[in-house]
Image 1 (tube, rainbow, N blue to C red):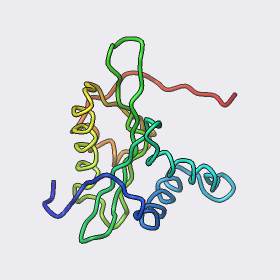
Image 2: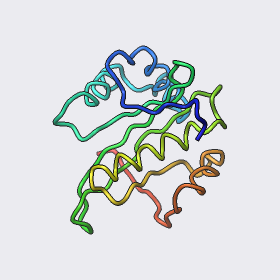
Image 3: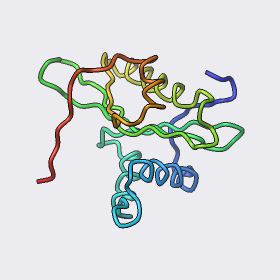
Length: 153
């Protein structure tokens, strides 16, 4: 990790700097224009980071005092372990900061948060076309052989 990257818990005063990263993340995955994440979902997501009863957490990466990355993660129970697992749900680095270790620093910070919480497994998913991110993921995790299915109900 580069020495000039600071990863820390998100703070309420980060909203104006977090929002463009959140919007960039959603645009990257095609959720913009008519398929954009609704403002009420953004507001609910933001509020969950600061609600002690929610299992959703957020870290941000800063360089030279500016936010350049975000990661959102949650702990949840599963049927094949006693302890919870950690799902790394959202990871995004500002385009100008890519290739500088920001994504790696955020993933490593989630690993540390999981360890501190007594969680022994962190997992995430990405689109099979996200080759750039997968080059990093192949270095910091093991690729699963599971295929994800889903359906709106």
